[in-house]
Length: 306
Image 1 (cartoon, one colour):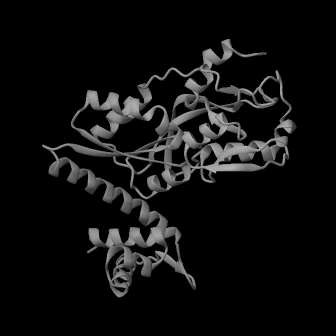
Image 2 (tube, helix red, strand yellow; image 1 turned 30 degrees about the horizontal axis):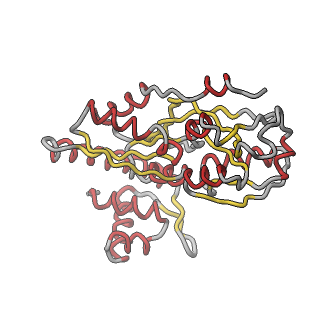
Image 3 (cartoon, helix red, strand yellow; image 1 turned 30 degrees about the vertical axis):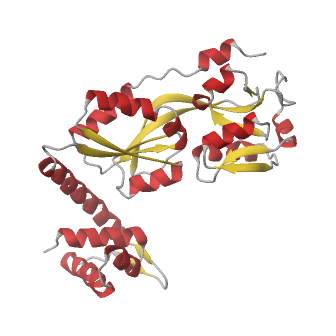
């Protein structure tokens, strides 16, 4: 008989691709881990892993088994949530990328708390790559991201428009130019997000597409750091217009009109395709889709210097 313990052990081995690491993480001896994996393989007459010298690779049968294991464990977690927490607050884990977490997330969470005070929200804000990994590991119920997620195991629905723009200090040499050739950008230093950020990926793709060499003088994990550096004329940065409403309206920063640059994108709500969506999760999904945010698109169009 295959038990929940078998599934939990198999899932952890599949995640870390090592029985010794799984044993350490689960506080179980390695022989016990190996035995449980062997019991599954013998019970179903399948091979879950390909054994390599230093790691394990999950087999095709193992991938199918993992999909079923995730569904069963998700349903078990949902059952526990319903029956153990029926009279208490329900905790929903929501992930957000840094742009989303710095702009729409606080207001969105406040709206949802007002409508459903029984839900206890646990928010994790980090870059796109990290949030994607948490979704794949079933450590998040839902996430809202601005970066590209193309994993087939994650369902992604667009909800809110966004636009990436190049900005500089309003006294920067390029600030008064009506139209800037992309090659002119290479003459100045850049302030950028770290690797793994959705915005950094867009920046690298654009510069590489036009074969433009560029120097990054500041690499920041925080949008506040990036904005302060740009305001202090440390370089050019690419940033979401949702993040610079006050700075644009106050004249601290200026948007550059760069030739051939037009990056409209969408903030998206994401969840694992095998996620069991209970009533509370469905409520949050719908609130995300219904959320209305008023960005500064119209303000920018009205005040363009060209």
